[in-house]
Amino acid sequence: MERCGWCLDGGIAQKYHDEEWGQVLHEDKKHFEYLLMEAMQCGLSWTLMLKKREIFRQCFDDFDYHRIADYDEQKIQSIMDTEGMIRSKRKIDAIINNAKCFLRVIEEWGSFDKYLWSFSDSCTMVYKKHQQGFWETRNELSDCLSKDMKKRGFKYLGSVTVYSHLQACGMINDHACNCYKYEKLLKENKVRYID
Image (cartoon, rainbow, N blue to C red; front, side):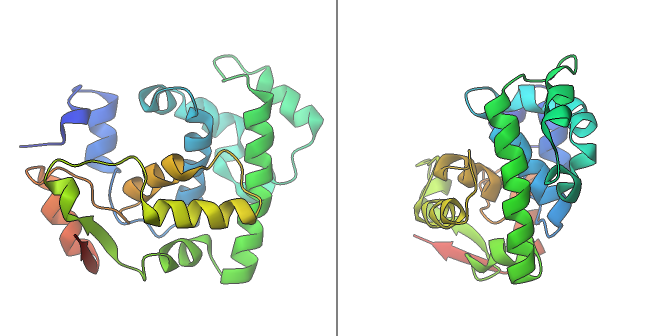
């Protein structure tokens, strides 16, 4: 079975690719989990984030953004003191801030998912140039969403980070054409092809 080249470690990256990456996602809690991990990743590798996911789950109340929005200094110190945790107070503060912003988006839109997918008109985007080997780490879609999120107060979610989220949640199909998940994703959602 053919897979994307980046995940061929036979381990944690391959499991993430096979079970999660690029699948059409419409669950707010999972969106927040990915955004939390993507904010924590800044300057680090995604594989490290996957390895630390259970520590994040423990520290951040199973990614419950309602509870995270109410964290105080005592809770922040408890997170900082957790063995194996990435000890960046700035990133932890950003995650708490992002939980508050996430809740405001839900209040306005009914769900974060509705807000997010409104940027693609609820379509999975397929960029033909990507399939021809011209890969990007950001694009007009991620620039637009990142700019709007920044206006709403989100932190550590620049265009490159947002682009990664759009790949992860199936809004952008960046599986390699020969990957077994490429065609599967095309069948899961409305698709818009972009030259």
